Length: 68
Image (cartoon, rainbow, N blue to C red; front, side, top):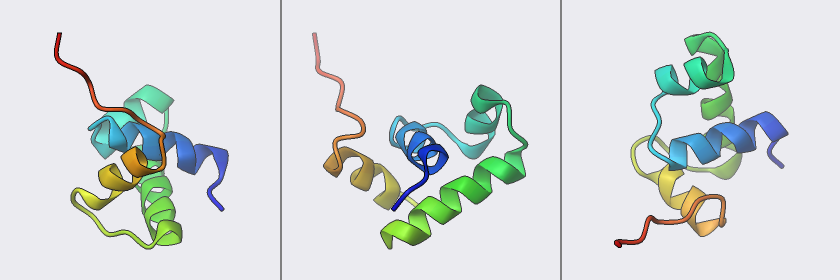
């Protein structure tokens, strides 16, 4: 089960934010943001790249933007 913070960072990853952007938005160090992302990915059994984004969409945490 993800912690609230891990869910939060997974949503931000799903929106395309980098660890640096997540750290700035959540007022965390870049290392702490990366740790939260890594722990969420480990718990979900996903790896880097696009897999966390796909999981965020599949879990209903983020939705694709629709064209006008």
